[in-house]
Image (cartoon, rainbow, N blue to C red):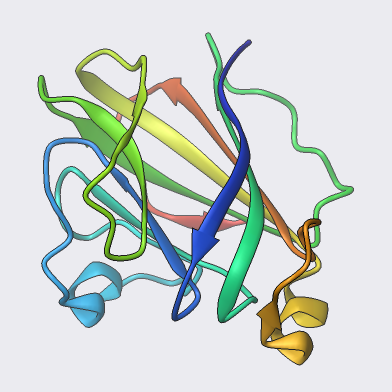
Length: 153
């Protein structure tokens, strides 16, 4: 396992993105169309739309690159899995409305992505976090894998 990012992201409107060849164009509904989960939109090729419990403020995010499918960690409150095709362009995390991507060392190819969330309900109740510590935290684990339907674990 390689940690590609571990830190804080500033979110607004409860969202951040993992761009793997496609920029988010503002069409949120398109990202989730036909999916069975509402946490991680993956219907736009080369883009993952991540939703957070917090509306505005900082959230904790960790991005891991695995060599194969990791075991499921039941300590997370929510877990969903989707597929992602990363293009040859830079793969990066982006905060809402940011033009400053956080580059991630991910090669082009097909990946399976596990998005895990903790304390989303508590963060939704708070709505805004102006403090230095995150209320809700997220983990994105990627590993090479053929495309498969999205699932909730």
